[in-house]
Image 1: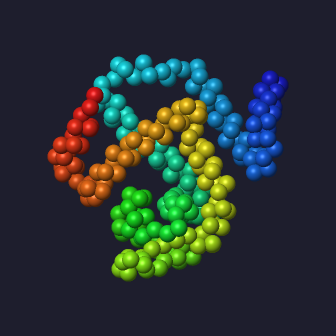
Image 2: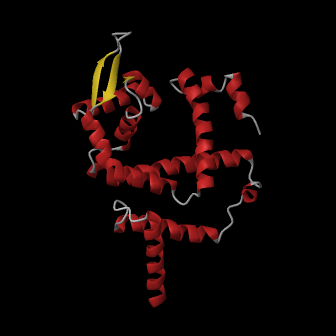
Image 3: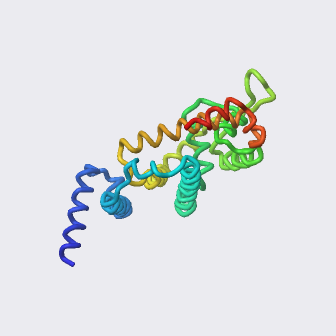
Length: 226
């Protein structure tokens, strides 16, 4: 019992030194997340996760495993968000992804932000309606094409992002899990590569009809690479 307590104190001292007296991180919840990650890392270090162990699997098996793991990762993050975001001004991940994008631009058309978030028009429109109702965004006609509506982030929307920042940061922290900086760079680079590939398909085949997609020779050539 004493050794466990001493081990816990050592973890806490290490945590305090790493956050460098950051008041926002100096709380029990932040330490619990940190400790969970440290314990998971210790468990994983006792196992082999080198690339060589995957070389025995066929490409088809690896593709199926990758798709399954990606799907699970999304559901994990969604579960964390559903439990924690409702207590903030931003109620769900969809609202966050729309608002954070608007934080990076002066304004954008409704259709463009929906497209960037890869949502169906009806889904994206409903999200924008909720944000407009909350006064987190404002809309106005495009100067060039008056038929289009542009949107931007309001001051109230900026405040909502700021007040939700602690929770969204924790979501990002737990989502990245125990990846080292090197692993995280490789992971983001790989996801970016996949995103660019699928973005081209999405723009050309918005209905995501796989029959049409799989007849595109340029796409077939890329996915057939070994």
